[in-house]
Image (cartoon, rainbow, N blue to C red; front, side, top):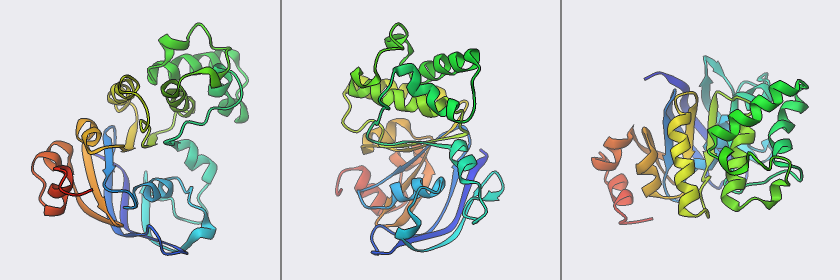
Length: 252
């Protein structure tokens, strides 16, 4: 496996000293589903936000270490944040659709970046909707308002909106929390296809989802990385007792 991102001795402390990360060293493997899991407050979402510099600088007391993406440290003050966030896309737990049509939700980001060619925009709409397993459900009503979609459809539309920009890394923070089992299954199935083209980082909504989806898994507990291994290994034969206790439901 090839590491797309190398996190080395990364520590993060907020000004209120909550949900910090301590000395995290972790490889994010290319063309794989990399799962970050553990109890709430372990630092998983903070790490995701760090990977495309979404943390509010005013809330950070200190940050040390490095995050190397394709050979460059993204924590460097000179990093082009717009270019970084196009390269590392983010889908949040709560879907937020724009107050416009399904089609416009997908093309909006491309149009802001200057894309005006109708053929390119149409291709992006179809491609991203197929990739997010939503195309068959909305292909005949692309000009309808996105707000009319169900919760599961809105979540997949948010994924399509991110995929339209063709990021190299796709990050998802509990993208199926609150969704019905059918929508959850569709998103999980689409991730298995998407990993052939993208590097995926997933914070799952449950241990069961983590075990179903992970090619590689990292267990976080109170800001510490407890264990990192291939998914099948970590969920069947963890080395650390704390990992075993969590995946078997003894705590959490």
